[in-house]
Image (cartoon, rainbow, N blue to C red; front, side, top):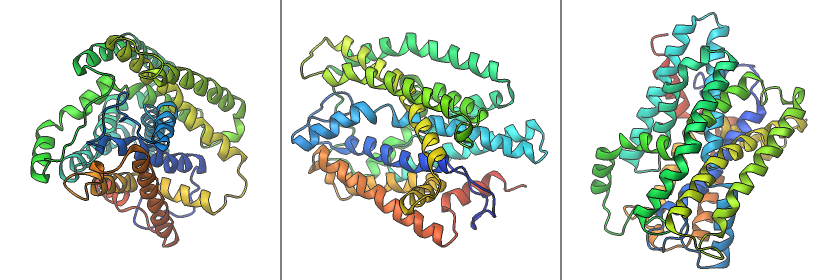
Length: 389
């Protein structure tokens, strides 16, 4: 998430257009990924997706399986890792000792966890801030390590997930008893009941995410591409970026293909279906990296950003604020404790509402940009992290 310095936009310091553009687009993918999770009257489909009723539902599910599910999260993690490196380098460039810079990163990570707790418990949204805050704590020491150490850590952690994840998901689907997960919400839910359950279970959320949806490999990849300035100075390394994009997209699309066949022309046993979902998640790491690289290409080719690009970058500058804002609106529209559209609409309609929520965020971010104001949560995070500075 972006981290601005004050309520007024920082002076003339140039920001990386590619990075902000990626963050702004990432928020759309996350909204599209989270909207189906509230559709509690729909029959389970494949994994987190509900059964398609209309042709639009089928398109949304197909597009989601290939381009969003387990890919948006990986892109988020790559950008998060990139941001960690930039924040550390920014502190180091000001002559701050490495130990103090690391402590700053850790304080920021702890506050992200706190923001995630508020989002999950008080607002009732789908949170990933706790998982990424935990990731920041786990990888913070590697910010001072050499590139070889970073690569070795990536290889070791990724190999663990390659061995563990497909098998774990195989047994998980045996436990579920079908290709799809039952709804997480129901018509009987009340705000107090939901908040109480979240209060009891929130400590397990980041642990389960790290266990079943690997975050650390993508965070480490983000730190690696940051050291190589692939998004800040993409024009100097276009050949590398093109290679990352081509290989990453190829792996991602091939990894999504088997999952897209489940329940239609292929009906394997449940353990195999879970194994396939594990492969879908693993190949999503390559997809998330490729998505980030695509914005490096866009940044290198773009000479004069138009109005829409400027709006997306304005949103990317305030990604923390609008991530929480989008999740809050998803709860407001879909949750049975609010407007309850989750009990009345199909996946296609839910996707259109998610796009509308994201579009409103783009508009609001542009208004803040014209007023020369940063996002309120970016301001709050900055003041909390640097309150003694």
